[in-house]
Length: 245
Image (cartoon, rainbow, N blue to C red; front, side, top):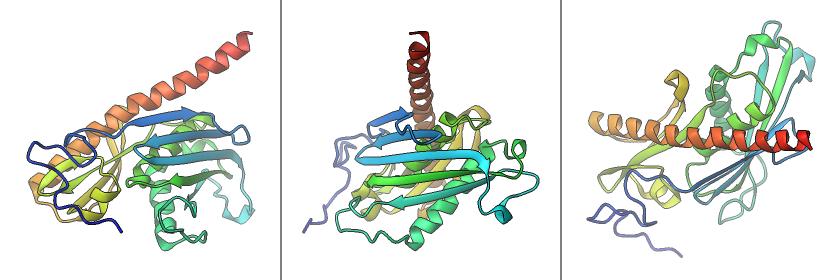
C-alpha cells in the first residue's frame, strides 16, 4: 500500500514528479487515429491516455430528440475498467454521467449549432489510463476530434487545471496532488476569443489564490492550444501529401 508523502512540494519549489510549480506535464496529441470515426484524437497528458471520437453531423436517432432549430451534441465520457489501479465497474458511474454533461456544455459555445438543424453529433471519450486531470485532457482531445470531423467551430476548446498543494498554487495536478492537495480548479478556454467555457473549483482558496490559479490554468491552456493547432496541421500535411501522390 502506498504511504502518504509528507510533502508534495519541497522548499525549492520542486514537486514529487520533478516539475516546478508552473510547469505542465508532457503532452502528446494525435489527430485522425480512428479510421471508422468521422473525427478522432488521442492525447497523452502526463500518464493520462485518452481517445476521443466524433460522429456527425448526421440525422438524429431517435428522431424525437432532434431540435428543429439547432444541432444536438451528445457526449459520453467513460473510464475503461483497466484505467485505474483498482478495477472500475464498466457501468457508467455518477461521476462519468456528470463529466459527460460538463464536457458537452463546455464544448457547445465553440460550435455553430444553428447551421445543422435536426441533426446530431455523437462524441465518445474513452479513458484508457487515468492519472488526474482527465476532464481537462478529455476536453482538449474532444475539441480536436470535432475539428477533425469538419464540424464548424468558433475556436478550439482547450482544458487545463491548477490547484493548491502544501500552501502553494501549482499548474496541472497529477493524481497524487489531486487526491492529497487542498484545491483543484479545472478550466476550459477558447484562446482566440478569450472566453472561458468551464470553471469549476473543488476545495478552498483565498481570493488571491483563486485568481492566481485561474491565470495559471489559462496560461497552461494557451500552451496546449499551440500543440492542438500543430497536431491538426500535422494531420492535414499528411492528407495533403497523400493526395499529391
